[in-house]
Image (cartoon, rainbow, N blue to C red):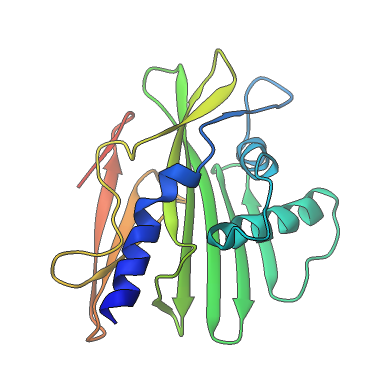
Length: 204
């Protein structure tokens, strides 16, 4: 068990190493939509069959390609795009398991930047089951350059586990602006906290 936890921690700590540093966002109209951000992120990812850490991103990319071409999704796959609220999600369901890939963006207070988030989480029987794909990444988009650059979680440090043994998951907002942080305990209990957005960063 300790070896498994160590492996997961190492995977969580290497996310930034595998992430794309800078991505150009192409769009039509006055400003990019969540669809533009999502496709910019996914289309820039080139899957390597040896890169088991990111099979989730490849799966989301393939589902997104079908969505863009209006092709029916494979069994268990689902893509939801809420352009109005700036939120998109890819769900893959298999038996009692769920892989969820969320994406959303926030407008920053300076009106010159936006913040894009990419969040992967796994569930088994409705409970968080941290796996090799799980992570949350942030990119800061510059309106002038039309590029988004990988950045640290603004205002907080993302984590996989807490010192009291809880597994941590994050829910991006489809409604509102705050991230929900859920702490899952082995005894079945859980608690939630809000990471509140102030136009530049988050705080509890």
